[in-house]
Image (tube, rainbow, N blue to C red):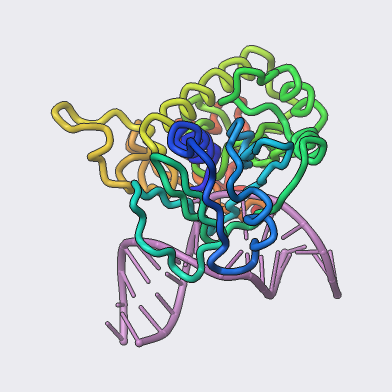
Amino acid sequence: MPEGHLLHRAARDHAAGLTGPLEASSPQGRFTAGAEAVDGLRLVHVEAYGKHLFHHVEGGAVVHVHLGMRGVLIEHPPPAPPPRPQVRLRLGGERLVVDLIAPQRCELLDEAGRDALVAGLGPDPLRDDADPELAWERLQATGRPLAAALLDQSVVAGPGNVFRAEVLHACHLDPFLPARELDRPAFDRLWQTLGDMMRQAVEDGRIITVAPPSGVARTDLPQDEARVVYKQQRCRHCGGAVAAAELDGRTLHWCTACQGAGDGAVSPGGGRATS
DNA sequence: ACTGTATGACAAG
DNA sequence: TTGTCCTACAGTT
């Protein structure tokens, strides 16, 4: 779940609900000093940047959270139940209590530390200040396959394995096309489609890339029916076979009919080198 | 009650 | 490339 859309969703919710003096604690004990440093202070700004979440607190402290693969953010309407013992950080406000569990990173920074971290990230399609030119330049500079570049957070910040598979399919792009060979019109479509897809996911709170049957609400779609190619056997767009291969240790899914034929780039054996 | 797998990113070898 | 980190859920025993 933790691709960029969830962090933007969290930032929005936290800004709305964590009003008033923060009640901060670390029931698990691994962020006690950080929690004490912000306890009783007010949030001045909450922002997401790619898969990173920043809580800016009055006085200049910044709580930086990265969920990694397993981290979870849970929202409780107050009054919240007692925190589970593994809660790294609980932040309570007037209208919301948030529990952070198993994050890959949870640390106290200052504004300079936040800036330094963000400087290593590519543009985030969900941010108003995103500069697609930077993503274009970095794509041009890599010799890697397009699918690998899309997971590189210094190229584009926010997309994970689900968005990668779905946006490449939506744009009918060959995942193994060397990134630098993508032409500018194709890049523009890719950027636009990715942004649209991610914005929709922020609204849905999930990644849903198929149109639901008439009469069915988007969010009523079961998880495994909500994607066109990711973890699918057959393409929900054309019914063709979906292939899966490991790339940099992540499973890549793509439709052998919709994608890959573009430049005649699909190899004759049907398969592609795995690494 | 286990087991396998997953949306991520890092360090180490 | 591999292993690891504080999880969660679906599937199997």
